[in-house]
Length: 417
Picture 1: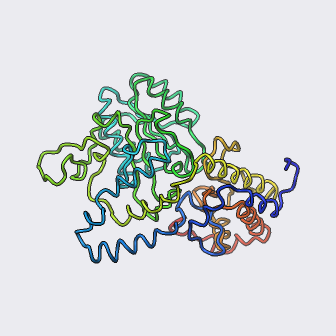
Picture 2: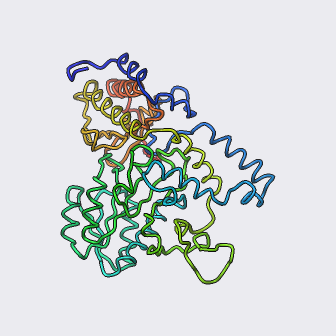
Picture 3: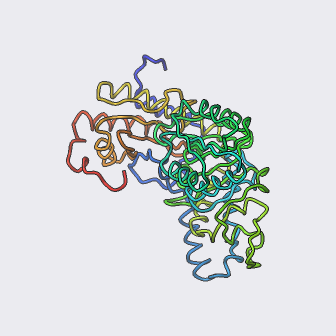
């Protein structure tokens, strides 16, 4: 197909027929008739998760009660889920653990990393980083007596250089939540480490859609989300990565009993666990952790490189169709055109973006909106089809041509956008 060819719906059906991972869609319980393009915000329900929770609630909790911490093997669930995630992040099995939220884990890592660089006082982050990351960065900077320097994405490398030997750490989100732009993890990590600094990566929009290679990049630390591309369910626990070489030096501040070297010794003096377990704080949300652990079975036999090729192709198709079908309707492209520089989403801009998104959602095409004018469309390659992209853009065109988005109910702001 050349750049001049018109893309037809039949073309996309042929693409689905040649898709080497099309079978993965059968692993999900997807609502009939919906085109779900919001896996970058909440992943779809994998088959088996509901059944796993039913067993956990009825049998293990209902009948086993407290015995199930041992008899049903509940206690090591955070470690097991962490191992499953590590395998798609290029980390060793014992370098990732599931616990808490990104916010809490980021706080732990920021304080712990700054304690490892006590003579340095500068943190570099990004203007436009996800708000939680900025809030936590600023609070930790205030607590630790450091300076937070937030700069534009294109200024990050020069800001690292400018900080020099005063640079303590860099904290960035690998794939930007609005634009989908990807940072050069290996390059930025090396740049900071060459100055003696540490780097914390937020993988919320990377884990489960990109072949992240934490150890190949010599990454120090990372946090990530369990409920987006990992499909762990609403509010699923997050994960945290600590490179094994930092286990001894890490001194995270939220010292809970599950992070103790001997939790059931119940001693009054804290002794951190010598492994990744030191990142734990309190008792895991067990049902949520079990759901995430089960959901990770989706990826057990998946080649992340093949998955990545598909989500790049889905994004390229979406951009091509937007330009073919929506020309002159006021849409702009907020994501990198180059698929290599773009995560598993494409974001459009439009001055009436909120109402337009509500109108297409009402038609069963589910994306989301981010202020002030971003329409986000996520392409979770395990279950999104090429024909879904054609149909989604067709609905967008109809919404614009008919003026459907102007209806009052689509312009009334709801609590969650």
